[in-house]
Image (cartoon, rainbow, N blue to C red; front, side, top):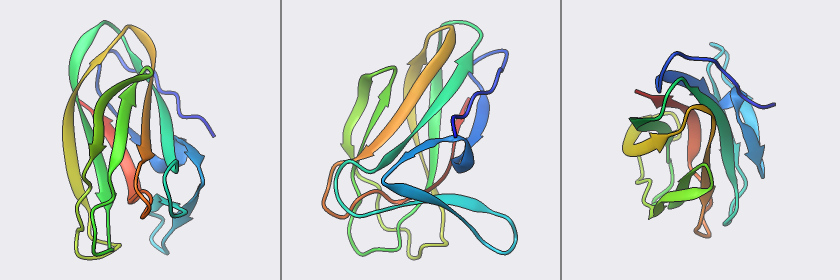
Length: 133
């Protein structure tokens, strides 16, 4: 499933169910909250298509959970350009304990791709959503 939302500028929330998942699956708890879980290893990740009305600097927030004991580093790219390499997604104390990481990004007018890719043997953390603001 590909996420695509039209928004007037670089803002909006894109949930896990709107992403294209690589080596992952969508899971949902009884309350209806969904997230992406990934198989171990490098290469797992997610990609969202987001819409911007004009070129703009924005803040990309990624909401994740890492119930493991080690960091789960990921590359973050926008429109094919790496924004950050091997960004540590630190343990959160449980697979149901969510934290948010914020990164500065630049969007172009029209559709933009946001991709996160695990680079370590542990794979990617759970991802619930991204937000642009």
